[in-house]
Image (tube, rainbow, N blue to C red; front, side):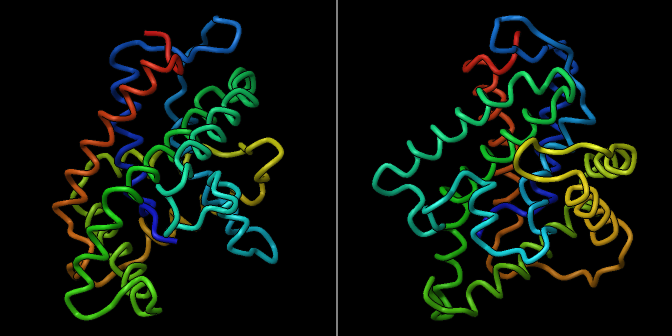
Length: 243
């Protein structure tokens, strides 16, 4: 699946969280009341959708489900009403779990922002990647295309860890925050295993420094900034936040 890398999600999440805290915004609940915003839970929520990959006997369709993409493969996203269906599923998820924010403030809002980031990545960065890799004769139909994508995603993430101070903050938060789960979807045990894997793989293991070939790093930096603004506008204008 060609979606944003974990560190891209975390850079965006930390920037959004800092803006929310700086402005004193609160999370708006279904009854019109509001609750405080927990930055740590929000950051944790941003890594939750991928935690399903720690499920025993994991299959790819499970990740499509946690990303509101049942029946919508990457290549079809944006066609024939799929965006409308995705947005409906995201809104339904928020309505279902909005009250759960009372006991895990920010967790489900973080989950939602992961979805918004992936939506923009698939629509804007994914086509650029395929355009770049087409120069060596590869297309969406070639297995090598996705091998290169996975490698480039890691290389971009490793470079972000080295260059983005936001990720030092994210690492600290992930080390401190645990015992959360996504109700009726991803268990506490799965999410804890995923959290520990992220810490080990991205922040503890050493990696060879190498530039990505087809996923343009400068384009990703711009994507991060643009996506922060896009999500903040949505959270405020669509009443996820009381401002």
